[in-house]
Image 1 (cartoon, helix red, strand yellow):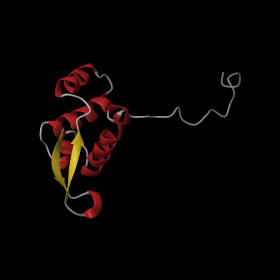
Image 2 (cartoon, rainbow, N blue to C red):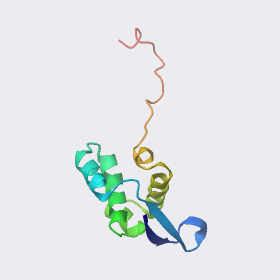
Image 3 (cartoon, rainbow, N blue to C red):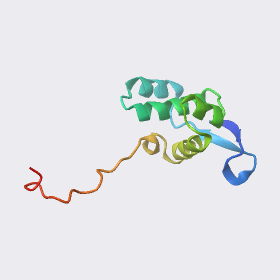
Length: 103
């Protein structure tokens, strides 16, 4: 079961993109109410907008993102669901100075 929308972004021509419903609407609403990270809230809201029938472009615009970002988020959602939507940030570059030298 999924939501279909017309999308001209992938492949440079019109085709139909299915948004996979990894979660029920109720489960998605629950996750939205429990999410604390604003980035996760934005991405879940985007998926919720697609569930509600928005086009990819409209769903992305509602959360202040471009259609290309929405396209990436939709692709990640379809590949593995929620796990692919949560932002992954590394710890950054390791420090040059050791712990003793940082004081």
